[in-house]
Image (cartoon, rainbow, N blue to C red; front, side):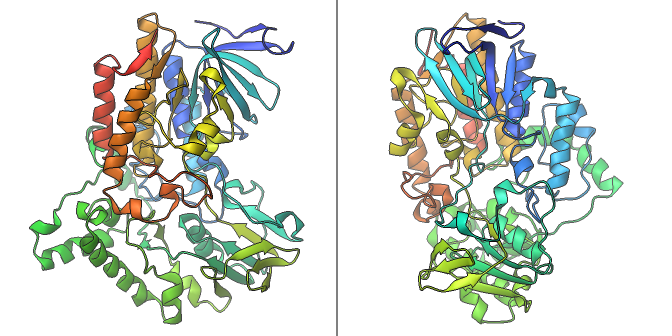
Length: 546
């Protein structure tokens, strides 16, 4: 183990090479915890992040209205009772500034900043078969020789933008995932928002009353659930903190890593009682209807159709103009087969005289011109500001934008361009000592409370590296056979779900040419944890280590 970074001039064209035991890519929820855990093992670790501060997703996503739709008391690290209890949330669903402050609090409490290199992008990571170590190169010219690389780049961190002509626009263009830190003046401006997924919804409902005129370009309407947010009293904070032990015992073992789990069987309840359960979940003002009502919602088309119509009816009740029904209420896919956003008066925003819906389902956006947005029929919508809430190259994009090469020079971008495969969402065959969080074929790729599942992955990775060191082993890599088994297991579960039949970023279908596969493990966070733990307890069968 290297106690301090060592430098030499080999393998780098004369550039100084710094040696570390591990490099962590990213300083968000997973990256901060991974840095902490590896440092606790005694490793010399360097974390690298493109941002100027910690936070990951919550550093970049500072667009108007950004907030989490996981309840704050569950959206925390659970490895330290002291760390948990010394932070207090101000409301049920915290906003971006408060979440960013929380992650800065974590970095300060654990003294992590000294081992993070900010403002730096990892350009490449190549496995050197002669030394069985990785060579990492950054945009700052750093060359790092490291035994382990752990990617903590996030599920939704690679913005997806694909409109020609953007550079010619005379106004301002912003992507929600790269919102500037300085204030953006939208007052009395002609503003266009492209996209109405969870991010677009938060932006639209926040800026509608501020802008001069708002055009919302809608392709796919979204099912929504009204968020019931509330400020926490001192008593509320004390109450959730007193349940720390209960949360640590429950959250890691539920289906989605939230406290509430699926508790009802559709077939076992009479119609009136089913309706009562649906209403109760809806009135909770959280994602409970989606993740904690009936498991059949995800598998049974008839059950899904009934719950979908329940939500559509709730949405129709709020829209005064029937012309908005087709524009804003889904009809061609089922509730819960897309990501379900929480919202606050989103539908009511469209009753304002300064808000207009532009359907681009059959008349898509063709390009951005000097004046605004042009659709295929030739119409140009003049705008001062364009806000792109166009989503992400989810789960894979952050890593395929890095030149990652494993054994025999194989490219992760090329491999995933043919077929998106991992072993348990933790490693990939052909890439020794490359560990991953928040990548495909694990629940955290879409279907898990992020903090719950990211902690689990970090702890598994830490345990695996500890195992190697305790047994004087240098490298570990999953066999092709093990990876084949996991992919087959994943696909068997995923393809039984309605999610697999619905185009969305859950399948990567929002990115042209991306191989189609359900990105998230659908067997449940608790079951996934159990399978990962069994592999570790059995000495990593199916992995090659030496």
